[in-house]
Amino acid sequence: MCYGKCARCIGQSLVGLAILCIVANILLYFPNGETKYASEDHLSKFVWFFSGIIGGGLLIFLPAFVFIGLEQEDCCGCCGHDNCGKRCAMLSSVLASLIGIAGSGYCVIVAALGLAAGPLCLDSSNQWNYTFLDTEGQYLLDTSTWSHCIEPRHVVEWNVSLFSILLALGGIEFILCLIQVINGMLGGICGYCCTHHQVRTCMKKL
Image (cartoon, rainbow, N blue to C red; front, side, top):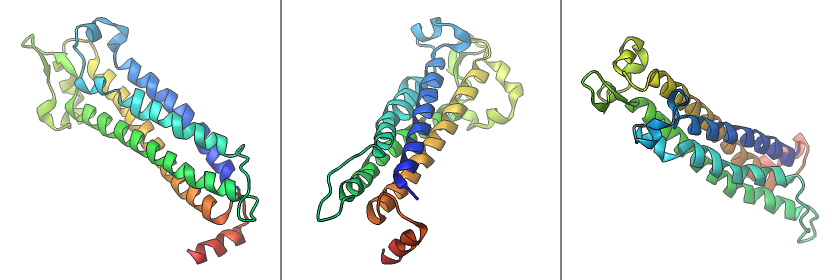
């Protein structure tokens, strides 16, 4: 098996997921496609944490491009081993994976908090409040209460859908980066490409 090809596949997947996170986060600024709520600061505070743009987006691009470049990495050998440089590159990808884990973890945490708090909206008392803040997320199971938010229209559906997407995408990114931690360590210790027998032999030595 070739750990470099596996890393490249993970990297390509992360690029797509990061783009989707950025798009989902941007859409949160425009409930129903309207811009006035952002300019009037009538959006949930969790939207302004940029969890999808920074956490699930920019901080994921870095490890993603590192993983994609591993297969083309052509490092010089050392200590008499031609693939020593590639092993070092695989081990260094573990550090990039940790950055991805931090970014995706941030995305997941903020998205979960955004879902639990609910949107900032105009309620029946004509006040802008976090109408569902005291429900501890129970409003998610009782859609009949969503009508308590008068403006923006359908803001609950908008926030729930997009924060749920960010939560799911961030979770997938987290898992992929975690897989690359294991993949990078195996590639660095066992060799860039090796047979299943070599993998078993390597694991016995650990």
